[in-house]
Image 1 (spheres, rainbow, N blue to C red):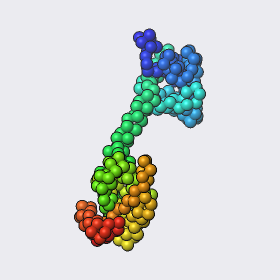
Image 2 (image 1 turned 180 degrees about the horizontal axis):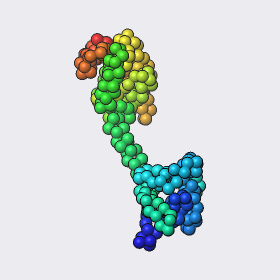
Image 3 (image 1 turned 30 degrees about the vertical axis):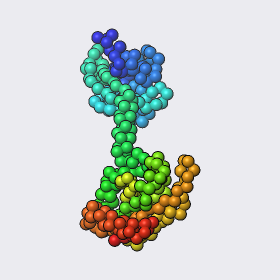
Image 4 (image 1 turned 180 degrees about the vertical axis):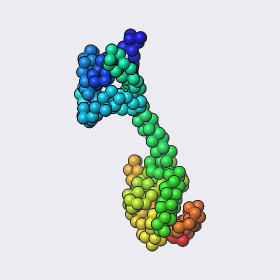
Amino acid sequence: MLALIEESLDAVLIIDDACTIRYANHAMHVLCGYAIGALPGSSVDCVLPEAAAAQRRANDRHRGNGAFGKVGESVLRHQCGEQIPVEMKALDLGMHDGTRYFGAFIEDLRPRRRMEEKHAELMAALERQAMTDPLTEIANRRSFDAEAGQMMALGWRRGADMAVGIADIDHFKKINDDHGHPVGDEVLREIARRMIAAARTTDFVARIGGEEFGLLFPDTSSETAIGVAERIREAIATEPITTAANKKLAVTISIGLATLPPGTALDEALGTADCALYKAKDGGRNRVESL
């Protein structure tokens, strides 16, 4: 049995009721950075964090049934001072020759924590991917709908209006036909970049369709939304887009806006914004209309 304990991957520690280490297997020495055989005879304080060791010394009730009398997660201290998260499975070994002994099987939680962190990072990356347009690397329609729901709920609690918009690149099909889809992709990426740069930090911009972008303006009146939308439109129209092949393309957008008072459904407001967009297109493009 002792040979099995000595070869166990889990650290094993036995202390007496004076909190002196009476046995530590190979894994325990490695876990806390001590030379093999160095731990027996030492106080258990050498493997406890400073705060826990100080508390144990100040309160005799912590001897024996404190750090090693519980089942669950705890922390040990490496010889170099690093704190090691562990899971302890403790047990009372009873009396022997008038001395009470306590034992603990100890698992290093760092590998598990690293796996959990990697899993969390992977899930976060997948979530970002699911909410991001791969071409422009800005928010996509799913993200737009989710953000709109949150903004609407917050706005309704405040009793504040909100404006929504739909922006569409003028004559985008002609750009693709005349210059090819790779150039069209360049245009989409640059349009997205300029729109976000021109919007306020509180606004939300997403690519919701082929050449369509959704706009959310929280706590914003119709007049203010028109002003911000005009700034976005001008950011596109005032400077040609230079492609990778050094072609300069004059590109414009049209924007349709609608207010979204408390209680209004998002689809209803988007439908109104879409009508305003068609009005902008019919009015000559490169303009902002609000309904």
